[in-house]
Amino acid sequence: MLDNVILVIQVVLALIGVYQLFLTCFGWYRVKAKPQFAPQKSFAILVAAHNEEQVVGALIDNLKKLDYPKELYDVFVICDNCTDRTADITRSKGAYACERHNLKLRGKGYAIEWMLKELWKKPRSYDAIVMFDADNLVNPDYLTLMNNDLCNGSKVIQAYLDTKNPNDSWITAAYAVTYWYCNRLWQLPRQNLGLANFLGGTGMCFDTNLLKEIGWGATSLVEDLEFTMRCVQRGINPTFNYDAKVYDEKPLTFKASAKQRLRWMQGHFDVARRYSFPLLWQGLKEGSWSKLDTGLYALNVYNVLIGSLVTIVLWTDRITPGLPYLQSLFDYSPPLFMTIGILSFIQFPLALIIEKANWKTYLYLIPFPLFMLSWWPITVYAFFTQNNKQWSHTEHTRVIRLEEVQSKQVS
Image 1 (tube, rainbow, N blue to C red):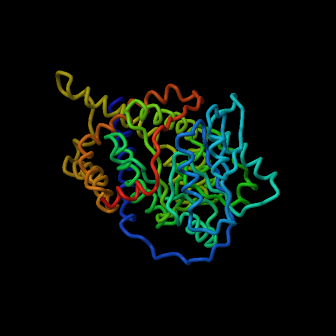
Image 2: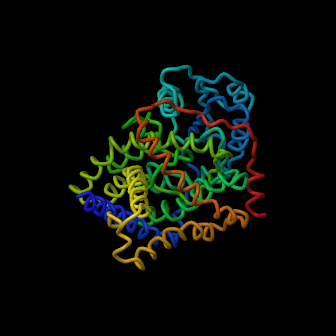
Image 3: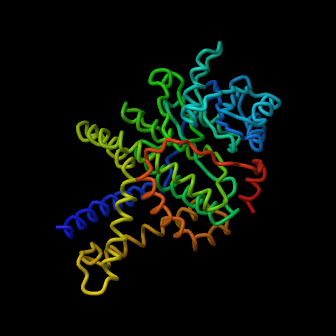
């Protein structure tokens, strides 16, 4: 009985893996450039910040230099429960400091929900809302590209997420490799196929009327994933702009990384529990590939959980003295599954090649499997602590400016 259950689980996980492998084929190409429009959309740029005095100034300086008419955008920093000089620095840089004090409802999702309500009260209205984190940097053409997408009909847009510090440590390099893979072989295929893209927490742009119509309502530990689910449920597919680059700072140490990823996985379990099966059911009833694909994506956290446990059980069975009791799917066709395994792994160096990564990053592919394997214990622990809704802050203490990021990309 157990043998059959384990085998069925392996078949399901293999099919999901092959499906994702199939989708990556559509990331090899990019569609023709979209129509260009003169600047016409106005933007409210919201920057989520909690004690970010070290980095918020660099981002505001960056945003003030965007290649877009200055009268068409304003910068608002959400100083969420700050106890440092974040608000003072924001004002000194010519941006709006919006101070929020609520120790019970903490976290980025609650801060955004509060800020939007405050924004609707202001005399000036904006065509779109853009969201960044305080440690971000953005290419000068970001708003121009968002303007084009909005004029082309997009309601929710995710920018290309990159890292500010890919070569600081093997951990930041692992994040960078993951980002390049996701941008090119996860997001771009879905954009090319007309499926829903997934919001990444920063570099996001929203049509104001849509936000006013459905509200924010995403206050989980992964507010970006939650809002993605809410959009797709309503038939609104977030789109992806490959050319709009946003740079995010990643933690240097494994401990800080594990803490951040634990929060992500805890939130992912919460969102998956509430949205995955309703979306899958909607997709089946409506014949919507987009909803089915998004529902499967929401279930990924369970795929990692179950896949890691099944793998451990199978390997334990193999190394236990005596004949193996449990049947591995690999045993049915070793060449086939060896090929699938190799193809799954080479996607990551392939992404580096396509994205023209700095040569130093290739050296970090050696410890990269350790980073990927570390998702297993993190996900298992997250499953048993998923009711924890306590938001944790990733501290940023290093100032990096856009010029430094761009110079390293060409070196």
